[in-house]
Length: 157
Image (cartoon, rainbow, N blue to C red; front, side, top):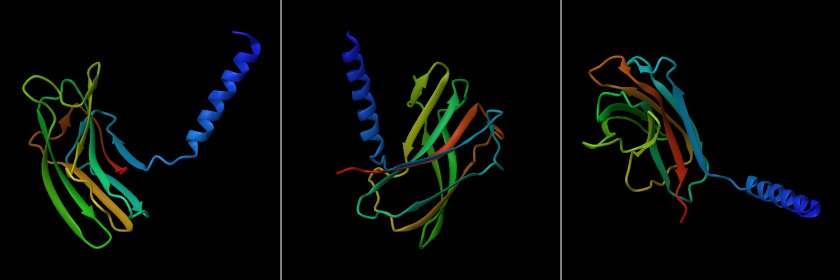
């Protein structure tokens, strides 16, 4: 490759990165990392975000990362939702594995899951949303949990 072709290629890559960085991803994701890889039931994961665009629906997901040594095929999470006009609490089971394997993405001995709270995307009202996550499993602290959080993303038409 001659020198001018190399510079043309470099310029093309820089321009592509520059143009793509101007677009918005329309995704919010926040995690809490457990440094000891244990989630104590007293450790609440708090997430707060603001919705300004109400023209498109949103998908809300639990994000969870654990080691392969995690002993269960599920996790029970208590979620407290504070929306612009209401507050409510949901205790829900999230399935992490079938009888053969983890259902999330795996890298070596780590599995990461993105599990939707609702199958259908939701139209959210303008305002501030606060979520608090708490594990409510019988084992306490819950071992081999590395991270928990929330992902909120716009659903493109």
